Length: 626
Image 1 (cartoon, one colour):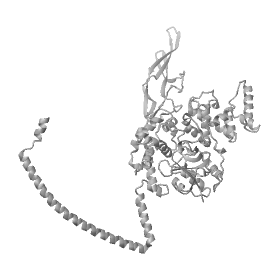
Image 2 (tube, rainbow, N blue to C red):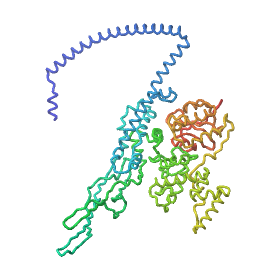
Image 3 (cartoon, rainbow, N blue to C red):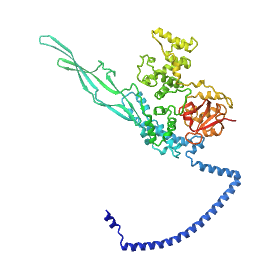
Image 4 (cartoon, helix red, strand yellow):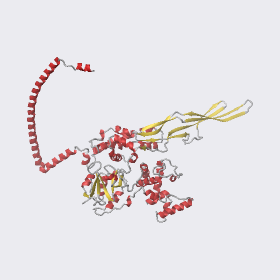
């Protein structure tokens, strides 16, 4: 190696001579080139000077003309507008701020079109379910559960726009790539033990030469043969969770769950003196489409995937908020959101474990069906008391369905019957929460009993329990402390009273108005309930407009429209502000005293404590002034 390198790099005398000559020629060229560049430089300077003089004269003439037309003040306004446009053009999505916190019609159209692409891509991930042998309603429910939320890729893009301050559009991203990490994968089990049974029943009749008749049968013979093997969906997996799908063997004819003596008549054959009738029956295994199984999600793994997609772990709450804003059906608690991530005290909402929170979508579904959606959180508090979310009969509603206790083994069926029973007693109790809860535990018969004796009271509860225990020969009947047990997990916002001292408006009236929307979802950019919910500044804007106070604008605008007060001076009705994802005010609520404030955050419209999560980024108290 070394010898080859030295030979190939050896320099002889001729090479040195040529190199020297080349250097000399190069020096001459450099001298000539230097002189030429010097002359050219002088010429450029002269041309620049002439051009600048021309531009100055042109701008001066244009300025004089503008002044003559619009006057000196008008000229200053035009210059200011030009400067503002230049500055804003450098700000990502400045159009959103310029246009009153809204997208232009063309931008909205583009957003909708691209959001539809997200939805289409998400829908494609569950197309395989269509080919599964199961009822259509079961397949529809399964797809809704396992289909990745289209809000996830939308949130990943929004994160880049808002948090990373990138001037990008949705169209800069391929939905197929963004959704890839969240796609379900399907596994199948080969079913080989289904069989077909054939039953032959033979009768024979003949006569001998002497005219004697003979009969035999029925002779029955059953043959069993394996049916063709086939695949049955047995598991749906994600990089962050899985769902086990149980098989269900049915017996035909009849489609029963146990083998019966039913047979299908296949035909009759005759052979000399004998006649044979043939019958068949068979097994057939499919998915168990009586119930839709639970999707088990590892929230930590889900968040790690988001981190791998460029999300900062400290911004997880914000990203969950983005997803839920895009897709209101998405439940963050199923994906590892901390139920206390916003420090919510949940006035009018439940303080429950994650095991219970995961059932919120099902509770809401059946609450809507029974027209009691505003009671979702009270029902969640009941589930916390009934089962803590740890039993299959989560609402302990087997008896409400006319079945023995704990017969129900599907959480959705339990919730379906439980919510239906709750709705019935809620209406019969005239909306009285205490009477409703105790009647859920005792049964509807407690309502007329209590009403005849002045309504709900602990005395009536104990007396009814003793009466029913004696009637049934039991040692006890129901839970006489049921109301107290449930209300441990629920805060009733309707009992909250605040003072209006020191304010220019009736604080209690404003709180009562906001409370009508308690629990309504958070909606990014939501300015009125018709949009499905509020964002933080939208709640303040909409509410105070009802009382003749103009607080239109985002949180920063509302901050600038109010006057600062110290913590010692703070009163119920003051606005409170935080810096969350940017230095400027980006979250707002109304202070209620006792370290609480009402606001719209990713948990919806709630009352939250000002410590814990909300102790960070606090900008202070501000008073609404005339």
